[in-house]
Image (cartoon, rainbow, N blue to C red; front, side, top):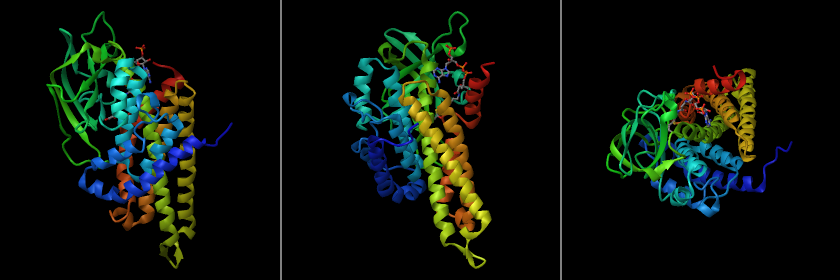
Length: 385
Ligand code: CAA
């Protein structure tokens, strides 16, 4: 067993760390308050090669290993979950999905533009009546001359107000008593297509306030047949395998939040004095810090194991679910402890831990809640009902 990182991985970690600490961290609070991310963040990520992720350089990508990409997400997550979330949807859910399922023409048309940030991608699965039960989507794709007409509604779609490319999941008419998931098909849609309408999700979100989330309405939205991704009626597998990529990215982002909570707590307990001592000298505080550190290292090995397995080319659905489940739950606990240890200061937005606490809740929910990860893990161990 070799737990060391290659030069390639350390180089990407350094690039991501420098960018995150110098250019993202200083404006993370401002972005949270404004509820937006400046477009320059995206162009800078493209310039540094971050958006190119694991895609081959022949297609404009950056040839990263999955381990290197996890290190990038960890560094971004340490600075800002909205920025990391933007990239996970764009580079993992969308680009890796096209790379896995696209034909040569689709890959060469879309991947270079996505890697350069010229085009932004979004992944449209969730609907008002289909969150965890993804097979229950109601959006329909009706065959028409030369393609399909899509009708339906999508909600909580990250990046969709700024995206020019959408992967949309819709159902063809059910044939031969097939199960509902067997009718799902994935479509690549230019967001300027007539009938593709989007607006910001209503309400102020608990965390991820700088992220873009849209409500999409599809009204007789025409898609040519050549824009099917992965084949007719293969869409559920396309969606699930894309989530395997995305869940690993979320798990790595949770590591970053967890590390940020630990960093902030260590710095605070070293300087804050109560009862005549630094609070870090009290055993109860030491126990909390020790638990935060131990659970962080456990998450880290699970995330890097899942990424390493992916790099070997083996299926890593189980490992990605375990990593997401453990890393997000552990980071949530760490964020809660960090706020508690900071006391009144932790509750105030003068310190960063309240933002970490709000943001981490999103990671526990999106791309499959902790309940869904438990289902994936349990089915793997016990077998499907
Ligand atoms: N890769 C490839 N194929 C897979 C797969 C995977 N990881 N997981 C399942 N499949 C295949 C199965 O092999 C099966 O294939 P067959 O038809 O050949 O038998 C088929 O898919 C159906 O599988 P299941 O019977 O397991 O499907 P299910 O309906 O019971 O659902 C589930 C399983 C795990 C609960 C799934 O519905 C799920 O993951 N739900 C959560 C959805 C989710 O994460 N949504 C978040 C969307 S994105 C987001 O959050 C916001 C954003 O902007 C990005």
